Image (cartoon, rainbow, N blue to C red; front, side, top):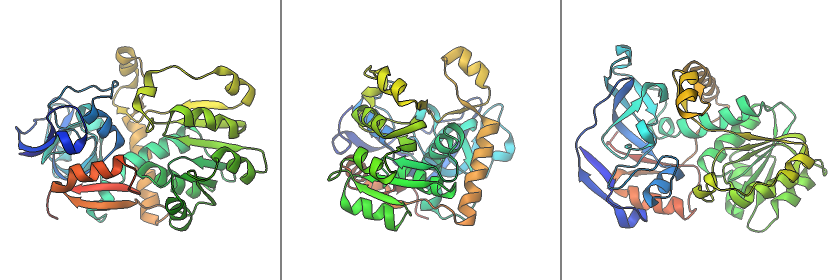
Length: 348
């Protein structure tokens, strides 16, 4: 099969090669997917550069942590009714998706209705699951509250803006340029859109809330942005830390000072998107708390319901062929895109 491999760690344009590699086969509790499209993520870039310590993969390897396709084989312990199902999935080990075939844990595989066209169907899983898990489950956003969304023009940020609006919240969208801020206001329905390249977002958030601060901050940036956001949290607010787009190395570094959190009287809420069949067993082995597959199915059904009603929609900024994958990754890394980047593995 064809696959883009990172032959060594480095910049995508320098190290990715389109090569013939062996097809992966599903192990226990895995499915094999014939890939129609892959959607690009910042974690892919961290892996390709060799800086993702949480899930380190030595080169050469096939990156890609999000695919859409058809289940064509199942491993032991997986219901055979999955065969022939159109599905979106996070491949095993969070890599292996830049290929014509991939394997994924059944716990991280979700059916996608045939009525949703390829680019949109490919753009749903990561952003809407992460944003819904963060806002609806962990932060319990309520109607009338104010939600601050970092990187609001991006794939996850655009989902968060829409999900917060669907919950009846007021949204302050932060984006890195005037053009992206306009996009958040005009296309996503943000109540306030801030160009962070020209305006201090803390001051803007306090002004927009009459000095009270925001009830929820959705933060997938990390680093200095996280600690600066502490300055605009309301009493009883929930600061959701769900990613490290500013630099994955912050995931394992110190730097959080307790005083602003204590004096701010807000909660710091951690979110990691991972689903497992047995959360208790996973905690015993890995020391991590992950959502159960049953709860994940409920969350997925909720997202599909919002999509079907037209309350939210995936934002696809680029829809490109497989040959353009490295260039698309480069554009994403240079923050030149909005929404999600979908790469067609097959002509559909």
